[in-house]
Length: 392
Ligand code: FAD
Ligand code: DHB
Image (cartoon, rainbow, N blue to C red; front, side, top):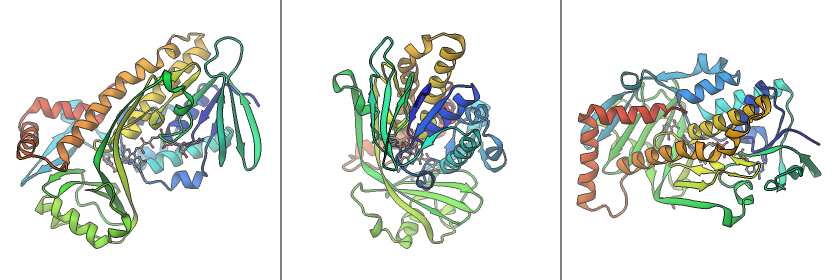
């Protein structure tokens, strides 16, 4: 089999790239290790930057988001007995869109099915060949799907297969540098069919640890509390979760919190990670395959989308205008924005969480950071610009 681009990974990065390429008349084959239902069952991000919303429109999958997404003009931040609001639209003229990653992925799979694009599910033993060779030898990707061996020859490979995928590992170790920070806590998240406690998100730094009140719609709430990395979900009953959340958010919100049974509960570790470069010959990495952010500030999916934007533009220039300059500089262009998202996520995480063994000095610094943010318009503008998304 032959195609122009093989996309390894049918998560949001891979599907968005496939759909954008399709709109430009560029053929791609998507390889996904799991099933469509499995991918759609993963509850992850919920806040979309305007750049991602615009990309979804460019990919012609804007219908549901336009009717079922919720634009948010600001967010609440709380610490000690204070809380304040940061207004995004005042500072940037733009809101963010609350619309779940599950829905984004569903819209993209539905669109892909309509286009008739080839997607292999349940793929195993994916191997990349000849990605590094210049000249006439084309790259190949071999894999098995439902017990049958396959081989696809292509021009380019997009590694969109997440943090544990094969694409990054296919770059020889001596050709890549990895930068990592592992945080000494995780997030315990639940989804519950209850109305959100507030119409905007609440990020809370409390003496008992971080908490986040988020949502998917008017009757579906998403809440998180900071927890030790080695905690077991089984030890967190719903009651324990609700009690912990209640004591971490400001009393006026805690009093209004409506609780109910959780319909999903999981613990995610927090990590910052970047690989450099994000390309190796004709293999290009996008999204979690190349970088991870801690979730504070909702940059994971959004940074994946900016990579897709750069790669899609570069491939379009190559195929439609015979101009390969953007492909040559893909890694540098993408990394310049990636590191800014890394900085913002690291800063939000550092400012809002309680770290083990924080000294009284560390606590005062954190409080000073938050008081500066509460009282300083320029600091609020900087947060707003990063939160709604830096320009591509
Ligand atoms: P992924 O979503 O990881 O998709 C990669 C796909 O590749 C998967 O479908 C996988 O099955 C497939 N794959 C893997 N290996 C192979 C292979 N060898 N061959 C073929 N296919 C393969 N971000 C936020 O902004 N907010 C959040 O609240 C948030 N919560 C998160 C919770 C968890 C538990 C995790 C893991 C991430 C979370 N993120 C969050 C991050 C966000 O979900 C990711 O940044 C986003 O999913 C990245 O998309 P992606 O397509 O690059 O990678
Ligand atoms: C959500 C997750 C985040 O990490 C965040 O900063 C905001 C919202 C969410 O899942 O809704």
